[in-house]
Amino acid sequence: MLSRVASHLYWMSRYLERAENMARILDVTQSLAMLDRSADSGGAMTPIVITEAQAEFAATHLPATYENVVAFLAWDRQHPSSIRNCIESTRENARAVRGSITSEMWENINDTWIAFQEKSRSINPLMTGNEFFEWVKERSHLFRGITFATARRDQPYHFVRLGTFIERADNTARILNVKYADEAPDTFEETEVDKETDYYRLSAVLRSVSALEAYRDTYRDVIDARRVAEIMIFDPKLPRSLRYCMDEATAVIDSLPTESSRIPRRIVAEINAKLRYGTIDEVLDYGLKRYLADFLMDMVKLGGSVNAAYMETR
Image 1 (cartoon, rainbow, N blue to C red):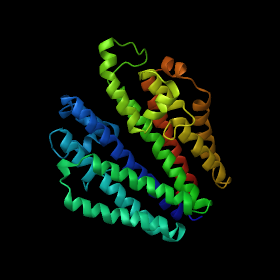
Image 2 (cartoon, one colour; image 1 turned 90 degrees about the vertical axis):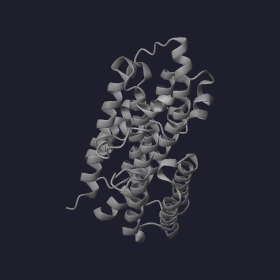
Image 3 (cartoon, helix red, strand yellow; image 1 turned 45 degrees about the vertical axis):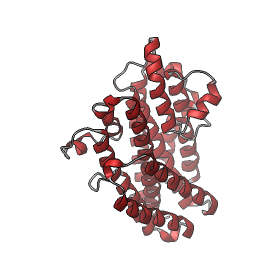
Image 4 (tube, helix red, strand yellow; image 1 turned 90 degrees about the horizontal axis):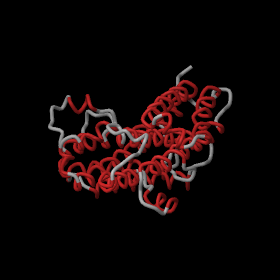
């Protein structure tokens, strides 16, 4: 496959996954804002911190309120990772490789962009709510369903999946990392008041990765920070856990041409080995924040190796 085609397919899926992830983060932030009025100050900045957009938001000179943060991350034309720009970038990448995706995949992406433009004319950016976030998630789910049902299992399909799981793993790690950014979770020693307060925040973290039901099915107990970290890092059956994403990324890279994939194969195998054979006790002994920071750096290395192996013009 041409490196240009591989790049468009890979980034098409990454941008769509990023739009969905942004909708999930903002949806959960909105829920927490209803429970905690302090979200109008420090708490409202959580999505900005997760996406590492502090400098871009500061350049707007807007107060750090929930409404301004949502408007910036959902609708801003200048911020490259806003939902608006992610959906537009998804369409532009898909348009460049229409011959490599099915007509149903293209129609879904094009319809999503057209519908988004209509919504942008009818929704007040400062009043964006749960219904819009659900729509973004549903459009992303619909695209993946169409892809699964119509795409031939060849290289274009593999690059679409690879972009999805690399982006998803990065997002899950960021959500966990910011949840504990200002805490000392490695001991998980909490008072009863702390536990009662943190229950809602931990529930929000699980909801942000569609894992609340999976947590209850797995542990059938109260929600605690240790188990939340364990299921989101190591569960091999949870579609947004780090382990699941890296299992899928490993399988995809193994299916790509071997002459170009030696370095990506090595990097993803090293990442996956830590997740397959690691334990939550080892993570806590090492330090959860440190572990997640290392994982995010590993994802940067993996993305760079994939780009060098398949997408740079030779």
